[in-house]
Length: 106
DNA sequence: GAGATGACGGGCT
DNA sequence: AAGCCCGCCATCT
Image (tube, rainbow, N blue to C red; front, side, top):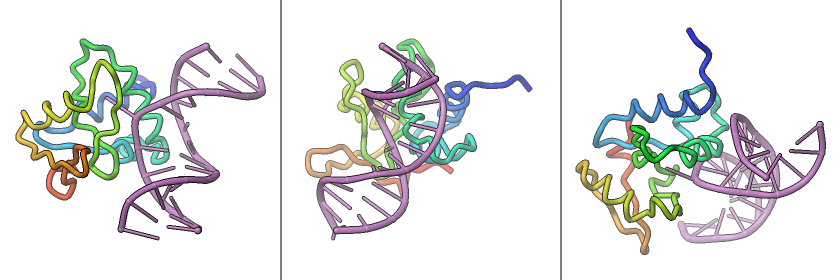
């Protein structure tokens, strides 16, 4: 097997999240054998090119909330994308939130 | 090569 | 129990 760099591993795992489900930065990190690299996972996703086919919107933080504060991809956009997949978006004191107990992928 | 950064998370208060 | 603090890791400057 060809050696994959960190970004590639992250992207591969995110691609594996089925439609209508979500995952977390920490879980993605754990799946690529670097359980403490959750922060780096976020960095990798931030560096995603616009035209990428990686479903970045399915990745949330450990609390099921949207961590993004990006200008090009505001949290409203991410919430809309999740909603479009049938995921119920809860409003937790003016913050978008997803019930991980229901939507978290394995 | 050293110091800074960030779409995180766990532990302690 | 909601937040603050600090350690982690790959990258960036």
